[in-house]
Length: 86
Image (tube, rainbow, N blue to C red):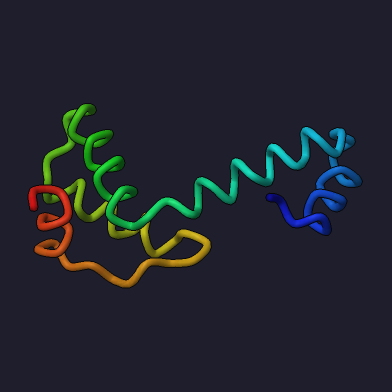
């Protein structure tokens, strides 16, 4: 359930209804609650589907991980490979 202070802030700053603001907050929280392993796999699938080779994809994924709101620990290329390939 969304934090009421955040919902009130979103409602006041955007003009969204409280229900819409709560859904937006819940969606954002769910996005950032995604486990690191799931995030890495999802982003790897995305990059591979766009023709990005692994060394470049791993660098991009590593940069993305460090910029998340609650940054994941630094993962080496080997750790990224283990998450993806087991």
